[in-house]
Length: 387
Image (cartoon, rainbow, N blue to C red):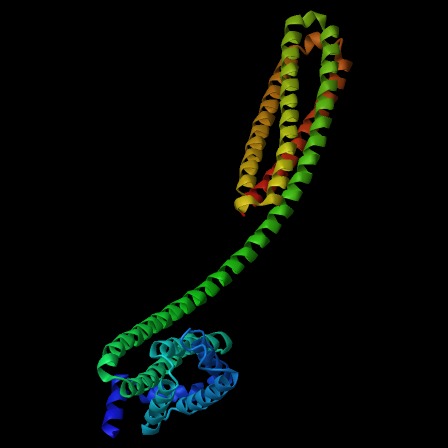
């Protein structure tokens, strides 16, 4: 008998580690055994042929015995006493006319409940859980095989042999599916750990993004304020330029003897007026773009791509403003040359010339102020574009 039991233990590949795993599981399994054993016999009564064989009292008695038996089994003592008890349970079920297939199905249902409770209610590392459940499956299949042996011994051997083979195939399939489930659980656990790591990386990236968006908002707000100042300064420059045009018109009337030179002087001042007007238009567009940039940064869609477009346009407008300012200086130089050529013929209108020169100086100061504000705005936009 000892040799037979050793061979069966080796055949089911039950090792000393499996027995140790069962001992570790004892305290975890004990709270679930009464429920699982009761479920086994309740499942048996669902079969039409077994519905009348068990009542509530017998179910309670059988479940109590089955629970005590499992408590001894999970102690890890897989010896001759284990085999005797397993065969005795099989004989009792056969004597009570419980069909073998019915018992196998109910037994599988009980094992499923125990494993499910362990995996959902007990906290173990995935690999440790897989190892312990594997040990439990091995021993429970050995127990089931011994119960089936009692069925075979108690019934017609020839008729039961084919059924036993079929049932053993079911056992093998159950073991195979259980192992596959354990592999899947381990893989899912690894995927979950990987997902947790990715979630932490995403959280860090989101925090950095929030900080960048805040910086964008602050820089954009400063740029918007500067754009408003540009608009006010440009308006003052236009007013001064208009006054200069009026004064130069008076000079043109006074200095009638220098008609041709005065005509050239008028054209120069008209050019100045056009340039100043262009600066005014640019300032207005800059203000509008700054407003759009503020809106885009608040939305922060796709990490501020829309804002980058607006910032680029503001930069282009700032460059255009610088070129127009340079043209103003060139026109003023040309105007000075013209004034030198006609100074002799403009002595009568000297006072008007002085007044016009004063206004032109004011215009230059206002235009310079515009240039400073535009440079400040460009600096702000440059900070934004590097975020």
